[in-house]
Image 1: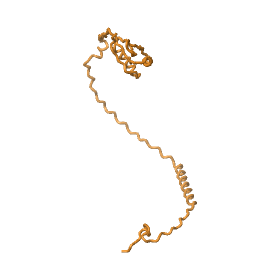
Image 2: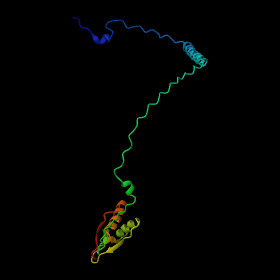
Image 3: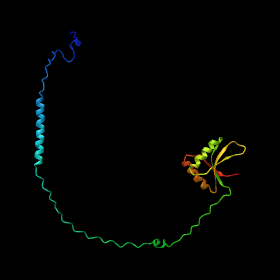
Image 4: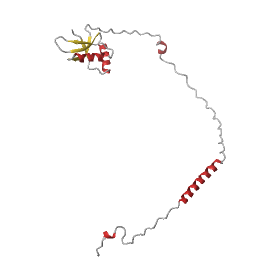
Length: 181
């Protein structure tokens, strides 16, 4: 077998002569212009013929004979009610006895902070005042703490109401207990 040099030969030729390059024929611009004019003319003629078409005839509506009404089925009479609450309820009276609330001798208080600095306690008191609730600052004797206190409340329910109002305003933690003075 003979040694062949595949690199010199090139790819895809497989021994053939290279194809001669012919000059590409120049397109003539008048042909594309003529085709465009011809298409516009055909489109215009189509629109002209569509405008000359007569109106289509109105559709004929057929009237169907009305079906005969079916005889109504006779319904049995409505049953009589077994209960007479409809008549007796408006004339009834019920006595409700409310339980008396137990008022404790010791009132409830709520504390919403204890601070070493009087300015911090004043700031918390101001935040609480913006919610429409009165508070006091108490300094315990023998101590350097300032407590922000609300109350006294007769009922724990009232203290809870104010506590929830302060929680909605992001003023927490507050604690409720019975006052022991």
